[in-house]
Image 1 (spheres, rainbow, N blue to C red):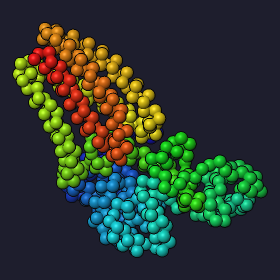
Image 2: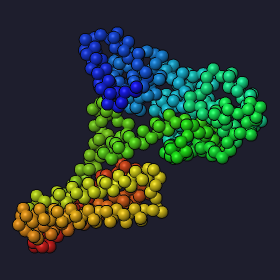
Image 3: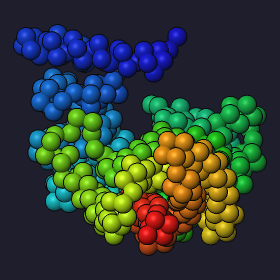
Length: 454
């Protein structure tokens, strides 16, 4: 029985405790034996779970033949840290036995001059395959694909195809279909392995191949590729150039990486953080990355405080305003974040666009208006009871409704506006939304108070 996520976490922490104890005592041999007895993905997880100094020591204890497989499982930041410690010949040696798409992923993190040096140290055949993949951006189908494919012609009989497959030492991972092409290498269709194994050997490929499958253009974005895999439950899919010639294929393991990276990006971006920031990144790396958005947030906070300063005289007259005004801004921020999250997720899934944004805006407006009325009623009654002042109760109730409705509108429209301006909504949306809800919350609450108490 496979361990669940909690058991795996406990296992990792137990291993780390043993490793740190051994490091403190200088007992490196037991650590080496334990590390190299694990799978590459488990070694990578331990490295990512270790502080920088311990991580360097552990990396030096990993067997040379495992370094490449471990390296490809690491996050970008840690990969780059380890690659910087190697010269181009060492890098070429480490990645020598990896699949070409994994090699490409690793090389894309290196400076251009270093990439050229590494390529020059590779064999001619491997260099050509990797160079063809490096010509595509890492966030496209061409950047995801592997050139390790099995291609057949439609006129062959299944018996011939079976004998051809037996000449291979092994099939490429996740091979569920063989790709059928014409003499020019143009995509014609797919021959599923299940059909190959269960059909009369005398039948030709042309008779049973699937021709209703569209290949993936090399320039398609990785997010769209992931969506196609999800919609069609694919294990692999062929990739073609603009002329329809087969370049390679994408497999489900690459798509899972895209989905995980997109999820990490969305989660981290909502807090203004780099998606690649490691949990145990050094102080000098984490500080500047966070400082930028903290600085932007400081500017927005100053704007909100300037709004408050406009009503300083009113606040001095009615001290209760100073106690109550954070409630309005906070509720608007939470309501706006709910809407913002729904819209950004919908955009990421390809469900939200110009054609249906009006319906979504109306829905969010109604939801926020109903919630605003209910919460305003509850808050107004509570404020009236505590301060024995019906006027201030009415003011905060009205301000609550105004800010929740504004938050819903801003949370719906901001992502669309940011995307039109080619700005990542997940990264900038939260900061801008906070500014809107703070400013509108304070302005409506203190403005109404000034009107009634002036």
